[in-house]
Image (cartoon, rainbow, N blue to C red):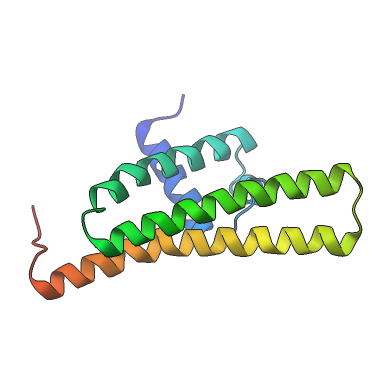
Length: 136
């Protein structure tokens, strides 16, 4: 049985690998020695945890812009994944398939970058304005 701490540590490792541009569920699964479905579920959980936090920051224009950008990138990821599947099914030429895969990779990296850096920049902006205070 997996403990809450083990799940928390595993999800932190998954998030860390995503932040380092290891974007494939299969790659993360292999690197951490855990199941594909487990990694997939962890990524879904991490994304769901991010949504309310970003929505809570949406009152500030910068945070809202980050959320809009993330949503657009996620939509593009879905579209590119569909294109990748279609290219595979229809046996598209290798250059086309590689181009789609590269675009999907770049889009995922951009989204992860915004998810990781956007909120940090917002917090720094609030600290500079004296709006953010530490709670303990």
